[in-house]
Length: 558
Image (cartoon, rainbow, N blue to C red):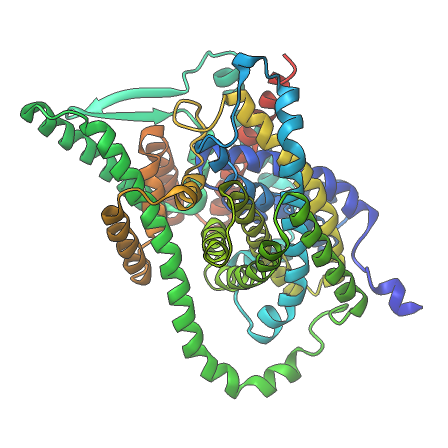
């Protein structure tokens, strides 16, 4: 009986009561951030500090209880990312539409699409939770993958710096970002975009606290590559239009837009391929060392943490896989594609969990593309169902990255993995519901996906391109090869591709400014000050993300 009582040690009612509403808020915010910025930084550190602050208000300082609560709070963020990086392709291709002219109301729109989106999200959550449970021991205890985000979360909790200046900074920046968003989107007292030119080159600057925060969080080096991608598109368009004006050419701008989009998508796909190739060769080199130390590792990790050999959880996880398979049938997949999907998700989630553990990067939509292409080679799948497949894979892979980071932090802190598993599953369901409603509400409120709506969803363009066609084959091949080679040379081609695709959205400059802030503070301030700046950056994402989502939902009832 004693074992049964301690099997969910560290999972308390306080942790649940904090994690569920926290997961809802973080998921809603992540949905907005991913749609508006085509990027979704890991919310792990932000949520960890938030959990520490709130738990201190209840006079709780137990690191394991805090970590279990933060594990649940992040559960829905990558669910939102997986959906946003894939399903908007249905609107990009015109398969799903917003038709207000025919009298379609917000309620009609949500009732039409919510059941499908929700089932996709739930399928990804169930299978992602299951696979992470089975990958945990191998990746963390046997392979000892670093999981840099998980290590940072554990270090943050271990430091025990709850409340104080970090709490003030976090909530102050959150409030400022919320006010700016209200003044911009609700009261229209602040313009959303500034247009100007330098040396005759037209540029745009989006007024977005979130963009500054993203730049600060991803670091100066990454923002430079984002700016380079935007500069390639901006300068290329400027030069080509000047040449066209002098030569009397026509249709150049439309052609350039097509070439640029194809090349940007190809860079991102090639970057995913390069990441896989780098991982495979790196794994082959490491296998020799792993084999020679295998016996020692097994002896050293048999007592890693409590609750690791819970057979009941393993059996329950297999039931979740069966439920996910049934859900894939309910959304319209035939039996054979659904079976192939289950196998593809296993492969993709395994690769995603390992790559995240080694690099901290999780190209979830790329794995969705790989699996949907593989399934379409084997069996005939409609374009709509291809998007569904990519979305389930992306959600599961996003979940794999997030949850394995949490398991890594838990391994360091000696948190019961069964408690993490259960709270991740519970909050993942809440996150799936929240993400499904939030994404549809935001898309309907904006009027669709695209440049004119302010919802670029760049990754979804990649998925749409792979479903419908690759554009100009020559540009795609050149871009894919370049993306693969650049990635193998440790140049982030995926960020360059996103910068090219989003050049007209005015995000590159504020994101770069955020990167400069990160660089300056890193070079001139103490480590504690840098942590405070990071908390402020996370607050800008939370403030604009939550406010934007709330405004979109309120707009549905007007």
